[in-house]
Length: 326
Image (tube, rainbow, N blue to C red; front, side, top):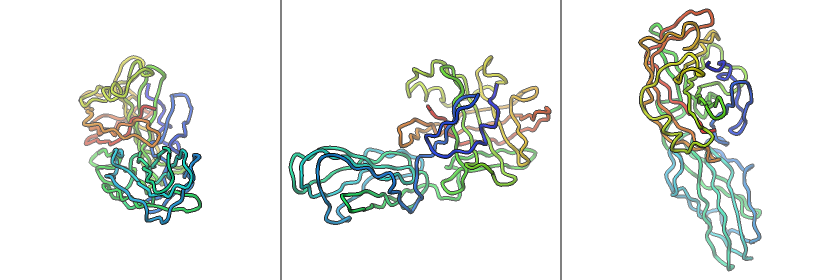
């Protein structure tokens, strides 16, 4: 049975907040972020036995490609020139900004001029310039990283959903700026279903707003599944609708309309004669903790039923959502 759609509307505070309730566990996928164009100094960490200083904040350089929705590659580096006054080991992590953080560790065997390298990790959330902060002794510095890709207005590349009912389109994007979030949830333990949603990130959603979610199951042997097996479960292709995950694998769709009424594909008769559901593509989108999410494009048509059994026919359905190996 599709989990009560209240999971679509719960607030999400931070990436590692896990809400425990009857149907499983749920997370927002947004990495810890500062605002685009700003910097976060709260997450800066330095350690080790070495001692060193920096002559100027300009003694640092940035390299790599930074694109919204794309995991940082091995070329995402910050290199910092130091003057080492005492040999020993070192470690450093920048503050997290716009889904990105840079970390490094090593040791100095000699004193004098040295260069350290911090490796970037994470997935940029929004386009724009970001000040990545770090600290050398008592000197606080930053370098500018510019992420390209989506703008903040919402586009087909943003996490989103759109459906048409009775000739009217309903849609919602989740961006860095609009307080809507792509949620991800897991239902079950070893035989599991996965959910993705577009939800408002705070308690009180704007009047006349909508929320949406898709659940896909069932994956068997999840606890020992590799990343490759997880990806294979979401391979491009068609899926059938199911009224009850305990008796039939498949998919289920839920929607909250502007009046707050919940509609589900498995309510009422659950009849889905003539309905369609296709996974079009998947793309890795790891967060800063290394958790694997799949940015998944889906197209569908279906019938949605409220608790009274009334039906709405959905056409031109599309979602770009995130399913997590959480």
